[in-house]
Structure formats: C-alpha cells, structure tokens
Image (cartoon, rainbow, N blue to C red; front, side, top):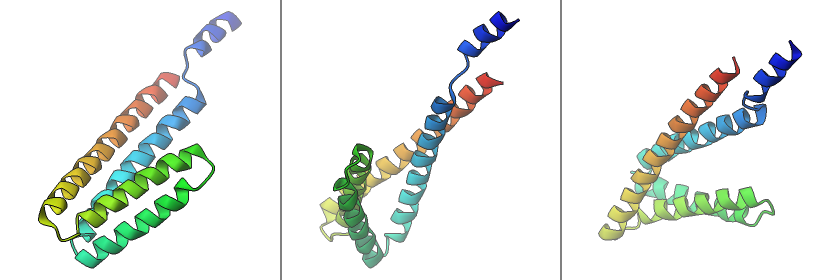
Length: 128
C-alpha cells in the first residue's frame, strides 16, 4: 500500500507551485484593478499627474533596492507612472499613445490574473 501512495504522491503539484500561482494571480489581478482605478481617477488632470509622480517615486525607490524582484517591480511601477504622467501631459498625440498603452497594460494584467487564477484552481484540483 505504501508503494501505491508513493506513486500517487509523485504526481501531486507541490505546495510551493500552488503558492507561486496564487501569488501571481493576486499580483496581476490586483495590479490590473488598481490600474483601472488610477485611469478612472486620472481623468482629473491633477490627480493623474500626482498619481503618476508618486508611482515614479515609489518605483525608483524599489529600483534602488538590493532584491532583483523589487527591481523588476520598481521598473514596472516607474514605467506605469511615466505613462500616467504622459497621458495627462497636454500634448494630444502623446496623451493618446500613453492612454492606449495604459489600456493595453490594464487589460493584459487583468487577463494574466484570470489566467493564473484558472491555472491555480486547475492545479489545486489535482491535489484532491
């Protein structure tokens, strides 16, 4: 009987894999949601500019950190902050391009969050 259980356990996904999938789903989905809220609030020019500058400052702070994961997140935050500032800059062509890129990034984050959430539930169902 122990041979059967050992064989069965070999095909189970690890807890670490489930945690990584769950964390990625939460990160992407919440990031997409926050971007959507920022775009909505950013329609008021001053709020969009302030939010963009704050995101840039936080992103630059994370880039200066020693952890490589923080550097990646900081670069992403800095880029989104720059796009948010450019989407409220006042130059029409720049505003349209930046807003379009922000829309694509927002939809991409939401889709990736849903994708990782589905992968999490499919993988977790294999454990039962």
